[in-house]
Length: 289
Image (tube, rainbow, N blue to C red; front, side, top):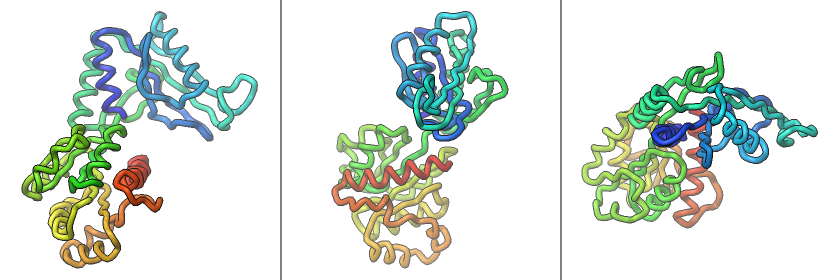
């Protein structure tokens, strides 16, 4: 959620000071990993570093930092189950705190926001995080390319809108793209060749084919296989998948990475159940990037 978080940071800084809380160390079993972040103001917050008592302690420390002289601090979270621990997971975390409040901070926040919105990764240094010797990368949202605007495409777009994807939907049938389910997406209709331009991004791309027919699958895969996305999945029966692959002998090598049928096997039947199964698989994949 770096893209949304830094956009909010830039917006909030126009009105008030904000503390950026970042997980910079995690050992053993912990609810979040290094690179997880949240924003804290005097009255609100965005994101999470793990919830529960651990997050309560981070919120309290962040709000103390808002009214103090230092611009950085840290919170050590023990989850070992002892008398003073914040949980019984068994691990520990270190949370770095950095107060953003100056004109220079606002310029930096805007620069990070704009770079992420353009699909670029941003290296965050110790000055950004408030942790000497520590740095990591802010990542733009993964592009989710939904090919097919039928019932399953609409359900997938509707649920994905809450999961920090850069969503694009393509269907040759322009009339299918007017549904409210696609309101959060960039919509594309007409010539299937335009899928090539949607792959031309520094963002990781996850493409899901949910077309209504065999011929639409073949046409889309001919374009996608010229520059295979990070993840390529297709819905359909094993017979249909086999026929599609057979129709594309020139794409055999590129199709070795095709995940089909796409989605975790949860015996899904309805469009929204299918969307859940696909999104669970996509989340697992993007955690590996």
